Image 1 (cartoon, one colour):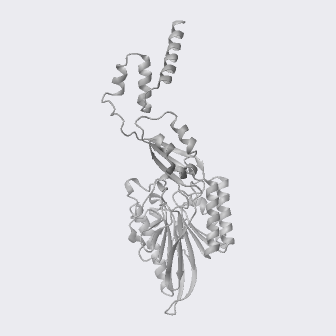
Image 2 (cartoon, one colour):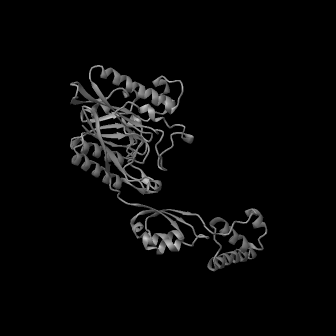
Image 3 (cartoon, one colour):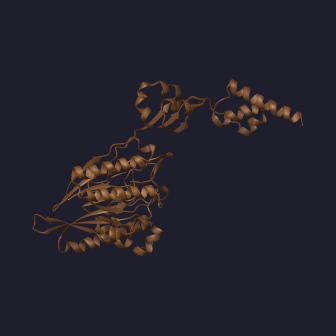
Length: 392
């Protein structure tokens, strides 16, 4: 039995104001091709299939198209909800969809209701079964009573959820060999986060310990956007696309998991091709514009930090002349004179005239003195104001 572990599709998300629906369609194309090429039996989606609880119509159509194409390629789909999804909306028509090979696990009531797949006979002559469980995103305050826990914390509700799964495995193991795969959307301790995930709680208190997943044959985690291995049997697939510049160095992909009568036989990576590279550039403006080493970034989405001592004029305009898709511009002046200790208000009080006040304001808000043309424009504007007042 071959599984493909994915998560965090975030359909409908934008990237610094740029729509990503076409890039997400490209990912779906790659996913379907991988299912066909690798003869995948089951696609796992460990939460955050949508980016928001109320996705747009075109976004819903994209998921619909993806599920139709995956099942037509011969794969079943097991899908849990994440913290970006509406579990109720995503779980609509789950019993009907199950008949078509799409298995939704979005409710607490379904935690111990696995998808069961026969694996044949193991070396001891016992019938072996693959049991796939889905643990959706559990909001502690919403599910604590339902799970029978006194403390509404991520640790307690996740421990209760995995306890229900273990109890069901134990019941089934009395009559057959059971190999368990658990999908869970959570922040497990040891995972490396990036800027595009929503914090589960302030200060990382919501992270759950890794040993909550001990004993499962494979745990397919979702929530963190970097593909990573926390242990041999506990992994994050990461998001299929980069959703922040902190993910510029990520190699996006998924995990291909082979499970047989003896358990998990192998785990291998599957890589996705990025539709557009990300570039994180830093340095003085003139160097960035002239350095041939940055030629590759001319077709990338760019985040640029300028280190000029004073903010260059028309910085974004000039950057986009070479790097058209510069989406983020920041300034970190290096070597600039230390700011005066006097407050802005005290400096303003000591200004000799109105022109000095205006030029001082420009310097204060942008870190660069007014150039001669700007000083002339300000002087002309002030003179017009003076003449207007005199003529009244």
